[in-house]
Length: 418
Ligand SMILES: Cc1cc2nc3c(=O)[nH]c(=O)nc-3n(C[C@H](O)[C@H](O)[C@H](O)COP(=O)(O)OP(=O)(O)OC[C@H]3O[C@@H](n4cnc5c(N)ncnc54)[C@H](O)[C@@H]3O)c2cc1C
Image 1: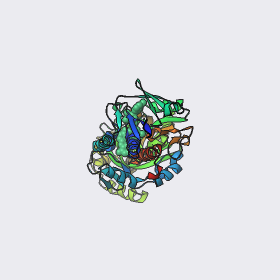
Image 2 (image 1 turned 90 degrees about the horizontal axis):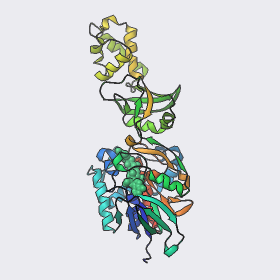
Image 3 (image 1 turned 90 degrees about the vertical axis):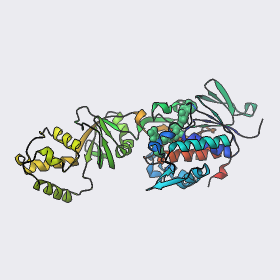
């Protein structure tokens, strides 16, 4: 038997691919078992096909509260600059846009191809259509520590890295959350999971625009009087719900309440950059335009036509009403509505349309090198862990970081780290 460490990496997604490259570069004999018939299916869809690899504006506060302090420590070991260096070593040059880092090719598939080529070069075995089923500790029998069972085959190895991902992503990504069940059987604590970075369905009673609209504004979510969270940016109003980056960012803070069917609602302010005085001045200017025009015509100079229609319907006002017949205070009230459009949240759009899963394997169950505290030959990395970040490259940064650290430690080369 070779004296090289034999490592099985379960899951050929972002975290598993990074771990496999690092472990093989550190001299281990690595096999990747991947349930799909290709590597990095979800990775190839990231960043709208551009792959937002990481973000230069980063610290623990961009991640969920329970992982914040550990993240600061891990980012000190492998931060965004290390990610960019790592990708350069794979032949991928990066570019930044306001801190957001992408491959210059602007093609996520080029990232997947670079991993595939490097794994081939390093002699890593890749087994496709192979689903991890279980891991058993065999305490050094035949010099090995674990039997890994996957789709009718058994592998003996010294270390196992579990990188099977979460429940989020389209059906083709095979994100069925297998890892939660496998890790639970190994004794790990699995925190309740919810879809995150996701849009929401609004209540059937809410009048929505007839066609999808993108608008800039601030969306604030409330439970009763309590402000839960607030985000600014480009919001999407659809005929059945709300989405867009600000809604997705906010989703991480409200998803549990929404899942519990608590009456969460959102208020959209389409003039968030105006303070009360400047909005009053804007209204005064609008009121001066008041003449024989219909309210619909009048509002066309103020808001998006689909939003104007929605507001009039919500206020039960006829489009043909002449503005000359509407009082100043009523017109002012109509315009004020653009600052507080209410959406009653009925449900999330679910795991299939979410970018990440919040919850998962408690990070209290892993050591700083991502080995399981109850059996340090087993490593858990990537989104399977209870770590989720904001939109903007933070989730892939965690996948690379945990893959890099676990891959090097599992192969016995922790000196690769600072
Ligand atoms: C549409 C979309 C866009 C996104 N865009 C971005 C972005 O631009 N930037 C960003 O930072 N994050 C983005 N994310 C989030 C990011 O893709 C994930 O956080 C990241 O891929 C998680 O990496 P992972 O390796 O843990 O899981 P995955 O990438 O999901 O990989 C898990 C792998 O394990 C395999 N697998 C599952 N079960 C088994 C099993 N039992 N046996 C063997 N293999 C198994 C799966 O087939 C998969 O290949 C996006 C997510 C989505 C859905």
